[in-house]
Image (cartoon, rainbow, N blue to C red; front, side):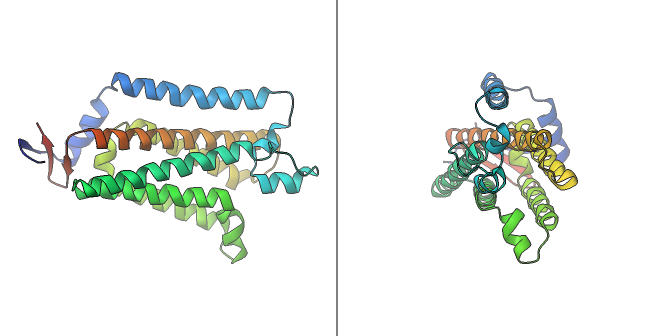
Length: 241
């Protein structure tokens, strides 16, 4: 598997400079266009449609059912449920990719990247589906903001542990995903309001962030599984020539 291997010594600065200077490939541009266009067009359609109050489509089904005073409609939590499905699909892809990379005896950093991405995304899916940071942890006396802070730390650790692998792929997509999810968290924690305009902003940013997160990880796992073996460590990149 590792025949014709070339060792390239790269410093962290070399890696970052190469990532910042690298132009997106045509495939990456198409993925970016689809990732940006489709969720935004879908959100616009939900907000502009005249048949149902969009607010109840953005909130999770339980919250919408409790607050609407008109329980229940099948469209309650529509956007929220789609977000959970996107989290879950991404987690499944990442964990399956981690298994394949391990079976292929690929570099441990790649296996760790895929596994940690799958586990983190899977937990976010559970959190989103069962209101873990909103209801479950607060019921045990753990403030919601503390849980969200922990998630930020976990996300940061994930990025620090796999930054080399991330920078070799479409890192801009992951950066945008993080920014959109952070915006959603800020709106939630600062305003903590059910005003329709704030619900639209918070949950639109969240849904867009989830789509970008899914796009980055699914496309990256596909690239890793279809590319020659890559070995990333602190000193060298080993790539089949």
